[in-house]
Image 1 (cartoon, rainbow, N blue to C red):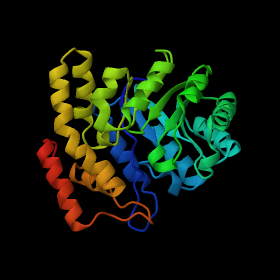
Image 2 (cartoon, rainbow, N blue to C red):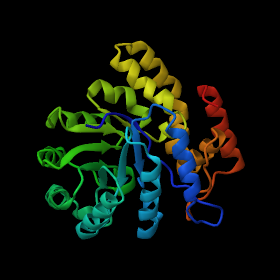
Image 3 (cartoon, rainbow, N blue to C red):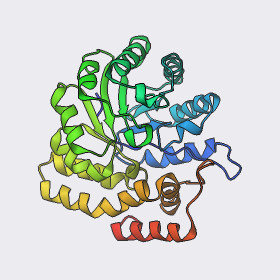
Image 4 (cartoon, one colour):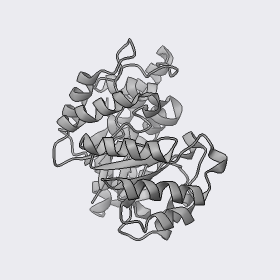
Length: 293
């Protein structure tokens, strides 16, 4: 069973654009000293679309060596075709991933209706040697999973949950409404974490947890302990920072914040660019204002 806070960890790159596998190991060793429940590797913040198949495999292998048994290891394995997604999911499993997060195909977004999505995810789940989580992230893909498709897919014994990063709480609430409590739904936005917990989220797969892991964990802990006001106050305090390192400055801003927190951030992979000096200072200001610098 999955529960709690997992960061979608960024892939560290060197200045020459190569993957810094040693820095990945160092970052994981530091995160391991926190109360995070596990990690999502090669997700959106991991710049999975910019990675080769060989790089993904090596990243998963390094991650497996540095993720302890008590923390969960999820791998992002979604590709444009069903065939390739199945192959990548099998490779992730062979590298030691415990579950796969599978994004909706996006290039032919106009054709990605419920019938196509149900067929795609069913075929992946049928063939996968590890459990599958659906990944709804329409701001990147242009595809929003309908609640009818989610309800049908949630009945599959090898589809155990979902990450919803749409940011629309009425959509999230509908996913919760049409699935059984055993279906493990995670929110993908720290901006909505507290609200999602109120609606029944099992936890969050949150970019903010890369730089404020204990604070994110504490929101859920306070919520589960019935300390609603304290959880809400912490959520509100972290809102500006969460917005800064996600929607405002994106992966480059998140990596800059990681460097300020003592992790290895490094540059994003082109065509993404590092933040400007002014943007870096804005990130630093928000970290200080949130009390996590």
